[in-house]
Image 1 (cartoon, rainbow, N blue to C red):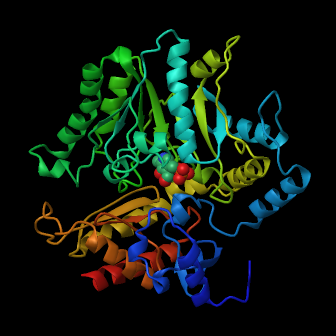
Image 2: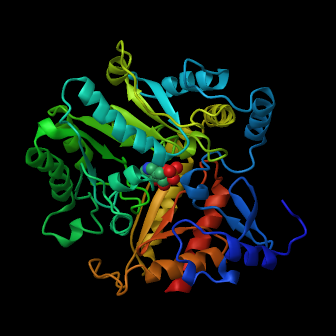
Image 3: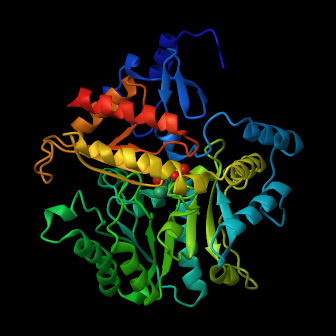
Length: 453
Ligand code: PLP
């Protein structure tokens, strides 16, 4: 990295040569961009020397916190021992074996095998092919349809974005691909509240959308249901308490697979190792990425149940699928070091028992601000619903998303990264955040809300 380039010149070069993901480039001026130059713990420093609290753990991924030299050292050591090899064609290598054993020790008892990729998106591509292949191998090739939910996020590849339920993504590139069916989401504040149902009734109704969809499509044609235990990019949508038990009942009575997309919820975000554990669900497959390495290097994967693994282990069965960088040794080494830190420091239990409840209490208290219609949080995973009138929670801002964007920009200026999803503010900090840092985060949030109000 060149060290003698001024902050302004870096921004000019970024403007000139870099196409950013999910960005309206026409609206992004040279000086509006932030160049993040350094990070440690929950803190970021930009190229202008500002210190900013990383309230999003990067992109919901830096669970162990930034600057962990233990992970850096593990990657360095692995790179000098074996910087690349793959696990195609009968080969394997020590870090992937060690990591797979570690993961099997963290997952529910009936899940013991993992197939790797490099991201959450490609893991969901793998899943789509895998569930269809599984049913074909079981003699039911018509079981192909995957049921997902509107406003879900499952990645940006053709399969990932198709499985996801984001309208703007579907409007580009000819999506969704065939064989994906989207049902309503259990979003109480955004949708349920506008109906004549109470929250519990709405949760049951949304769950039963799954049953209705299975009936409509025909169980013999449905391969699986995919869902994030809590929808992250959709706006940290914590379902009503009636939702998951009812979905569980439906899944138990139907011969379809359940895929838990744990890309955000996994590795401690909810205060359990997996979001499906938080809701006592029994997935057949789990998508993992992000917190698996705390984002230090790219690694994703699909965890599969013994039942599915058994079918794939039959004689003369080959799943024609794999990526060059899947199970990259350096990425596996990063994951092992990261999981070792999460375990040794008890970071997951800390979210459940200590820092989570500490944060949740202060977050909830933000509801006293006139701009906050609801403050919700599970583990260290929260959202603030911004409203124009605290006395009428069904009212929304005109020009949806504008207030959220303005609030997000104020937040950055106040030294805190929060994300805006429509007109809600999202928080998902590193699990290592201290009480003192939570206090600072809450103070920045209050100031941000005052500035935006
Ligand atoms: N699934 C979920 C639930 C996600 O939140 C994301 C990314 O945010 C993905 C999949 C895609 O992961 P990636 O960006 O690593 O491809």
